[in-house]
Structure formats: structure tokens, C-alpha cells
Length: 500
Image 1 (tube, rainbow, N blue to C red):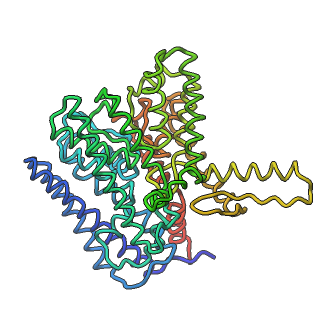
Image 2: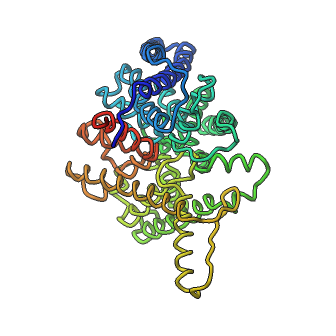
């Protein structure tokens, strides 16, 4: 028998959701302050409206649903899944008011893409978007990369109970430190240190290629937030191609790889355990898969003679593979060139790179290299059982910060999540087929959305059907949260309707 959620369940969900909404609203103070600094009055008013709406909704929820009860697992998961939907709806308000999006749905698409660190965009005339709105696009990507709940736990919410339930619901399976609040703050410490270094490197590079100092450092800041948080938004419509700088591309490659690594691995490196990057199953799987996929793509591109010079092959082929594998979505070529120039094998290689993704507890989406490594270990274990004598005892282990013995529960979990991603990739492609796009194009765009990548072959544009926009938004949402909290939300509504 399914039990219907009680009033106390709804109150707990509403109260903690209200707290997170307040946190989202307060983050809009940053673009307001920036708008005043650069003298952009109308954008400041857009964000003032956004923060007012957010604070009103958040305060009403916390007052009406006030409770002192701790969150249980079901409530925590529901709060997380709802908070990402609400964040997209509220974050879209100042974007829509700017006039650069054709509809509020388009603005919600970009807000969801930003929070989910995807990078697909429906903005119009990006090159003339205000500095303030451009900062917000990248700031929500920075927030989404660390996690909306991480923001609330770190800066705006004190004494939030049920923290670990929401931390896990946001696809963070691992605690770096024993306390979740301390874990959240360490994640921000890492991010802010890299932010200072990355912005400085990109800003100086921008000055060397002829940009004015303010623009160089502003765009460097925006690009860092999108690169380290593996998002893919860029201040210019041509993405990284706009800068025509090999140094710029090298810096962003480094930042993308850093963003794709597990924050727990960052902690080990900061603590002086540098050997961990060579021993850890995630980093080893990531680098091996990059090598294999790039070999396939480079072989295909070389076979067709698309990029005869090695440097050009690296700047086009390798850059797109790193961008796709880390889930970033930066491009050094136009979307149409994927299908106008690259062969089918190179495209399939790029789709595989996007579908695999980076590490767990990182800023990336997709299947994740830890799960791929676990599945590979399980496959090797089964092969050993077949070829060794029947009485032989086969024990398989892997290194992930520490040595861990492989068990059926880990393998089953990895396989289920992998299967869920493969299903959502194909379902999104079917919707693309429904609107007349070729299968490979549809699979490419669907994988990019569900894996939170942002590379595009040209399907994503303001004129595409509303159903396709909604499909990609749902894929971004589900892919970023890795399904469990989504399934919990669905179960919550089913129980509310059919429960007793």
C-alpha cells in the first residue's frame, strides 16, 4: 500500500525549499552591485525585480511552512529536485527582462542550461548583451557547478538540518571531509583559488591578443567560470573561436580538465598526495578514454584530410574532444562544421566522449569515469572467473582515494545509472527525429543536453519547437541530478495522488 505524504512532509519540503529560494535571490545582489559599478541601470532594475520575486516567494514559504523537524531522505531528495526547477524559473526572470530572449521559455532554457552547466543557449544577439546579464549567465553556471545546495549550505543557510540528504540528492555521493558543511566550504575554497589564478591567466592573455584590460579580465572571469565548472557559456557568440589564440585554448583545456576531476582528488593533491592522480581509477579511466576517443577522431579526420596540419588537427579535433569529454561545451569551430566537415566516425567518437563525462563529485554531468572504470573492472573479473580453475577465488579491487574491494552492489549501481543515461540519450534523439532531424544529429544534440555538455551541431536555436526545448531542459535537469532525486519526486507525486 502506498502512503500519501502527510501535511508535515509538505511543510518540511516547503520550508527548506523556501530557504534555498532565498539563497538564490540573494545571489542576485552580485549582478546588481556590478551593474551599479559599470553604470548599467536597466539591467540593475531587471535583477532588482528578480530578487524581489525570489525573496517574496522564499519568505512566504518559510513562514507558512515553518518547521523545526529534520529532513528525511524522501523530503531531502524532493527539495533538491524542486530547487533546480525553481532556480531555473527565477534565474530566467532578469534574462527575459533584458529583451534578448524571444520568450520566457527560452530564458528558462538558458537558466536551466546555466545552472545545470550545460551551455546550450537560445540567446539572441549575444555580442550586444549587457555586461551584467552576461555576468549572470556565467555566475549561475559557477553556482550550478558547485551545486545550488552547496551555495545554500556554504553562505546563506545556518544550521540547516538534513544537509547530507540534500548533498547526496544533488549527485554528490562523496564527502571530502566528515562534515557536509566543511565539505561544501572546501569545494568553494578550491573554486575561488582557481578562479583567481584562472582569471589572471586568461585576462593577461586577453591583453596580449589586443583586448582592452577591463574587457580582457571581465571575459577572462566569465570564461573561467564556464571552463572550471564545465559549463560552456561564453561572452561572445563565436565561443572560444572568437579569440583566435592558441594560448587561450591551452589555458581553457587545463581549466576544463581541472573542473572534470573529483573534488576529493583535488583535496588529495592539496594535501600533497600527488601520486593519487596516477593511481585513482577515475583519473586513469578519464585519461585513457580521452586517448582512445581522440585516436578514433584523429584517425577519421586524417583519413578524410580535413585538417592536414598537426597543429590545426590538435586545435580543432583535440579541443572539441576535451570540451566534450569534460562536459564543457566550448567550441573552436562553428556548429555546422560538425556535420559539414567531420565524418560520421569522428562524430560518433565525439558523442561517446560527451556521453562518458568526467569524475563523480566534480562539476561534470554524464555517466562518469568512476562508473565506467567499475564496469570495466567487473568485466575483467568475470573474464578471470571463466579462464581460471573453478576453485580459484577471484577478488577484484580498485583504488579510489583508498583501495576498495569490488562488490556486486557497486557494479549494479554503476550499470543502472549508465543504463539510465543511455536511455535518456536515445529518448531525446527520438524527439529530434520526430521533428525531422537526422538520427546522428539528433543523438549528438540529445547527448549534449543530457550529459550537460553544450556542444551543438546546430539543432539548438530559438526557432526550434517548444516541445524540443522542453525535452532538452528536462534532459539537462535529470542528467545533472543523476535521476535518483528525480525518481523520488515522481514517486512523491504518485503517492500524493494514489496514496492512502
